Image 1: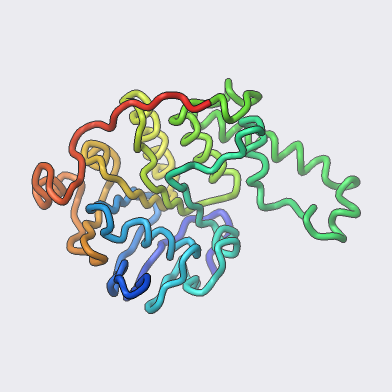
Image 2: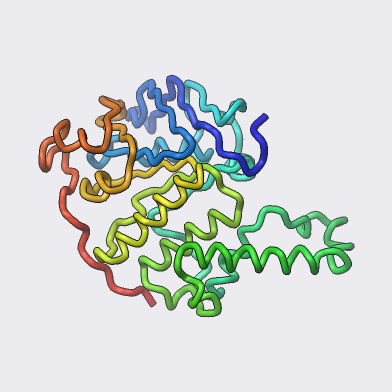
Length: 267
């Protein structure tokens, strides 16, 4: 069994998924290794987000097997997969907007036992130390992503790019060693794109397994070690970052080759 807190390889073997007769994944084989950033690229409808969804348990595969380390996770629920160390970043971030930035990170701690009735009864006696440690960890994660000075601000006051970084720090606090990131730079200004890319690279350098769905070829070339090219539910190639443009053409398959437009802060 994979040790808690230790990165493992995520592997899909012959994974298929259809929705109302439309094939989203067609016998997909893929592997994602610790210490690397692997991008998944392709046009809209290629099956990229479905690949993340079946890997995180939000959608159940129709066929095939998904393994994380030495464990089969194909039929596990999202909460079970999250506790094993696989975290997912959604395109729409999904923060608790009225909570502070720090509180958004602390609620992700999966080590709390207060949800169990018996544990809740004794939690006031034993939980103080745990809560203090949780807050310290959360502040460290915010510092890692560059949001230490926003810790006490409401999450809704953050710009969209800062909210993306906050969501990444929340994954860190839930213990994610394998991160599935769905378009983490979409809609960000060039400065925020650079900050998010730098953060993701730093995570890979800490031996985490990073999977990124991305449309921006400039970001892909700057970010990833390897890329899977998808089209119509199939993986058509696995290439190095510097080979992607050659395989796709400058603007092939509807994939943007320029920087994303700046976004406005969301209130």
